[in-house]
Image 1 (cartoon, rainbow, N blue to C red):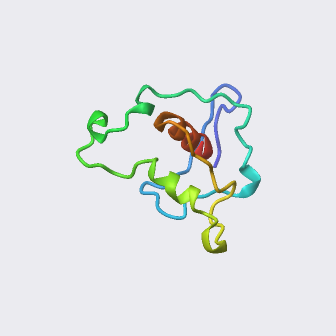
Image 2: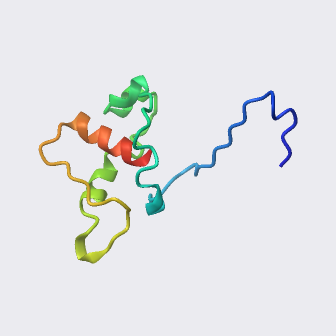
Amino acid sequence: MVVKNKSRQTFFMMTHFKATHEPFDYPERHNLLNENIELPEPESLYDFEHKNSGRLHIGQLVENLTERWENDKKNNVRRYPGNPIKTKNLSKKEIKIKNISKIC
């Protein structure tokens, strides 16, 4: 790919899947990729109901990843790097922060 005027223009390329599915993981070398980076939180981050998002369906909640990540080590199966995560005694909001931090 050729980018014209690359010295005068900002360039950003992103790749993602439209409908993500298992396994939702990343290379272990990226465990600490954003460790010292403060990522801005969107206003809707702590909306726990799909009704607030304008969607007509429930969809896949990021909270669904919590159970998978907590139980990742069962039967010696290690599907996700950096697991298992610990959520005992955390609030719903703290768990969401932990989930988002892991996938961002």
